[in-house]
Image 1 (cartoon, rainbow, N blue to C red):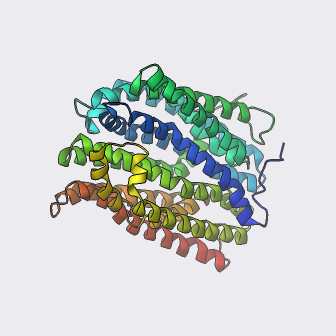
Image 2: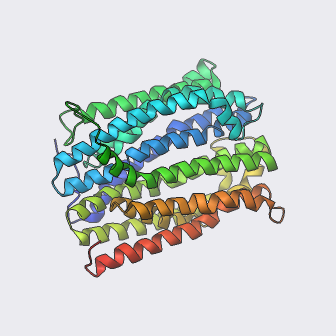
Image 3: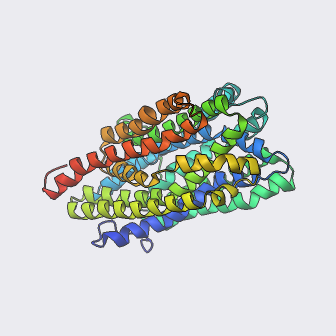
Length: 454
């Protein structure tokens, strides 16, 4: 049963992080394919690819917000599970997982009902025009029907990873992503269903991932299993999960709000074409962020476990290795995007006007992307150590306090217009990234080095 389980308390921290991060990286990249493949195919629909891409881009905030709720109880509870495992408290770890699953299902049902009931108002609020609304609503209504599947697959996978079964967690995502790659062209082009076909393929794929995750967590191989005999929601436990998960929730949710702000300002200063451009830029950002997120996510359970086991020297090694690896990667990917912007844009669309418009924006948007490594490191350490207040604050700082206001202000400054929307991102990376990492360094690393209690 334990043959594929990583020993989080092992002395070789680098090897352990890479052992967890490698399958997580594969999972992160493949998870992108749920939506990235949709965008690639939709952006190349003959005669309507660009406008359809804009319609799909309007659904991004909805997808991001659904993900935020999955992270609230998924990523929120997984570090607590790892800490409990480090303390050899198996019953406590299992209680955390059971309560998280209950909340994922309940929240998924509520989001489905609310989203479908108010989808038209939501889409026009998010920047839809009469031209883009049919594409956006066609995708959104079908996608929302699979919300519970998303909550299970995304929300429960961290509990597989927190037990050391990173390869199994990777397979959860692989199953859905490969299914989506196969089904997308069948529904979009073969059955001529366009945007609706992409949504149907995504929902089916998410269902398959959810079934796989549940099969593992109710089977014999898992160390912690879902067991609802005599189950009653423990709202104190749910509160602890939510308290830690709120940082990731706020990060994801504010990402959605920033996307809404961007779409609104781009519609005002540029029109539907610029929403298509931002859809492409957001897609490139997701691809670029996947590896550094995998490094952070791969380090988090190891930091949590060793915190629970009071092995502070291993914690320090894990934090430093995560920082070094993340910084090196983000520096390299920034250089590649800056040198070859058209290559990344053409992944999603070949329209000459869109490419010409997107190149200057992508240069500005990704300027100093390496600073994101510091944001990811600081945020991950705060979450791993159950430092909820700090994690929440720095989530709010970067997006809600810096990016969102600048997105509304900068387009009006010095005739920046649509370029002001792109400029808000690098400013937030520098300020938010440095503030988060410096605080983590002074309040966590320095204390470890001095042998003080965290």
